[in-house]
Image 1 (cartoon, rainbow, N blue to C red):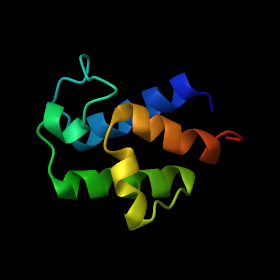
Image 2: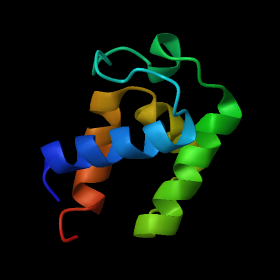
Image 3: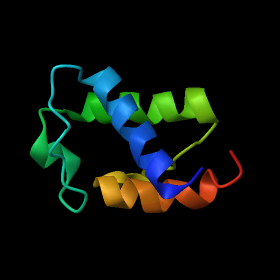
Image 4: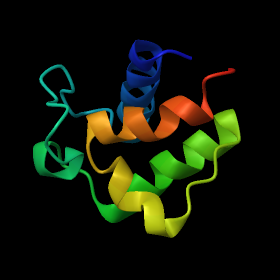
Length: 83
């Protein structure tokens, strides 16, 4: 997957977890939880969805790398390059 595809996939997963949130103005360099109403359980649900759909296991020490949209794309891109 390319970066733009990964970004779209992340937004799709977020939308499934918090469907009432408007993601159209989500800034890539600001923590996602600061921009939308999402709690820690929602974040864990997103990680579980990534694992279920793509087999990606994110260790707890890497959670902060996925706190922004840009950070999530950068973290996932090498893991998803052959998908």
